[in-house]
Length: 65
Image (cartoon, rainbow, N blue to C red; front, side, top):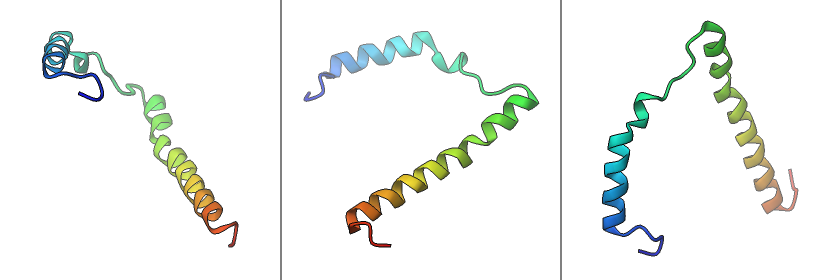
């Protein structure tokens, strides 16, 4: 209960989500152009993640390359 989610609160939220059915409104890209744009997300974020990881490693090593 450290995060404030009691079993009762979890059950109520679970039931509400089942009523709302948010998965029925979620959509991905539908057009060819949109699909091409979102296909690049993995590359973009992999690059950023790799850069951040390298930067943190270098900082931990004291900028020794």
